Amino acid sequence: MSAPPTAPSTALDRRLRDQRRIVRVLALATVLGGLGVGASLSAGALLIADVTGNDALSGFGPTMNGLGAALAGIPLARLAARTGRRIALASGNIVAVLGAALVIFAASQRISVLLFIGLAVLGVAVAVQLQSRFAAADLALPERRGRDLSLVVWSITIGAVTGPNLIGPGADLGEALGLPGLSGIFLFTIVAQLAAAGVVWFGLRPDPLLEARRIAAAGVAPPVAPEPQASPPVPPPTVSAMPQFLAIALIALAHAVMVGLMAMTPLHLTHHGGSITLVGFTISIHIAGMYAISPVFGMLTGRFGAIPVVLGGFAVLTLAAVGTGFGGSDVVIIQVALVLLGVGWSAVTVAGATLLTDLTPAPLRPARQGQSDTTMNAAGALFGAVSGVIFAAGGFPVLSAVAGALIVLGIAATLRLAVLARR
Image (cartoon, rainbow, N blue to C red):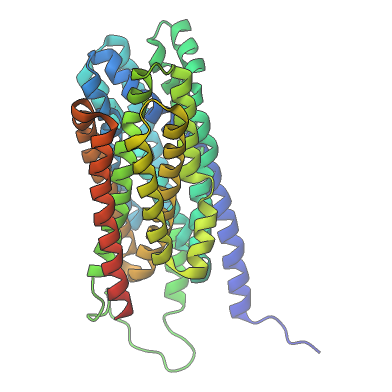
């Protein structure tokens, strides 16, 4: 006669069931959020050039987007630490709606300063997506953490790839409403962010961070030989923060390379006679490269470890920089390079986020995750801003060379982290 199920196995079954539901909810919300992010990335640079009449300022589109995400990273992480992921993520979506509305108003009134501010506020949507991938890891079992995290990253694909292709329909809608054509796409962003907020608010139950804390608290006193617990919990003094900061640095460097090269692609293509439709398609396949095969990198991370996947990602980023540097007016080469740029970014981001979570003691994870998101977006914003100046001075070849230098720094940080891990 078989024994009745034990309490631990019942608790594990419930945890797995909750985790599957959490991943599905986060995936749906991220699909909707990705729609708005993809739209803003593709249209922001062109809208700035149109409103200001200065192509050199167009790099500030992704820059302001990244700056907003950077400024929101730590506050969202702190809000999650206090109230849980549900309130933090839904609040971020609502703030992004306000940013999109401000972009539309600024474009209709042709007020450059408000346009920059609106794009920055809209960047909170990027911070929400980044926090969502960590939310998928809160309740995941350690051996499944990379996989679950990558599934949420993958779910960005649908909305993010569709977003840039809405430039044309958005322009038609904007003109029908008496708005500047390029601003019409941000109407879709407003609807998408509102829908994402609703999905998170009503669907993210139990809250993964709060549930993970509850489980940890319930397991503090095991039935045999309980160990005294420190209060409040702190990491052991032997745990060094250096590996965590190196993980944050390599993620930030990969993100800076991706943003800098991606930001100037619309201008490069239009300067060589490319149409708005071509720009939208190119950014779409780039975003597909960023997200479409992210589950593959999650599985590779689980099987081979995070560091080999990170190094492979930087190798792919190197190929991308070579393509943009020597592609010239060849549209196919530029498009292949943009796909590789997205694939390399995906490998480093998925493996790097898993690595950071594994390296960080549980009580410090929300703080380190917020620091990582802020650092990577600040790096992207900085290089995105500088990319316009570099591109104006030397085009894609010079910009790609600078990106190559950042890739070398990322590889060095990864190798140093590998040495520390062996020790």
